[in-house]
Amino acid sequence: MTDKPRQQTRTQYAYDQLKAMIMDNSLAAGASFLEQTLAERLGVSRTPLREAAQQLQTEGFVTIRPRLGVLIRPISARDMAEIYDLLTVLEPHAARLLAQRDLGPECRAELQGSVFEMDHALRAMDLKAWALADRAFHKRLIDDLATSIDEHRALRVLISKGDADGAETLHREHRARAGAALTQILKHHGGAGL
Image (tube, rainbow, N blue to C red):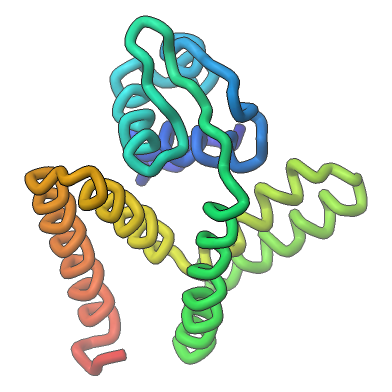
């Protein structure tokens, strides 16, 4: 596992790590894990683990079974196709926006570091390390867009279930985060727009 970035909350860290472990099949589909076991594996307490699992359940990645733990749900071919369809639309636009901006040395170093790690992992035939580096590169490209996709997916689930209160609350939170992110972008660019 990677070190916990300081800026992440424990819940966000647990969410990111669990999702990554599901996506790279470290937590195999159909397997069940006690919350305590997963919390220990990630080095967090049960509360952030439980909150992360609840978010992943909303997104359809896991099923929480009281007293039985967290069941890893299989990702269907349809789910994967949907994810890649969205990424195919978003990432090229994100790459264009990044190329048009002065990224600054930190962002350029992160992108270069990810490519270096992918090269190193491929030479060592370490596919897991390559996948982690690839994920870091793409995450840097789309940054908060992945969170936005996850929120849209969760909103779709709530609407499909007929959970009006949950859908309204999630959408309000989503809009608040998006507004805050846009405000930060505008501040960063000195009010000159994008």
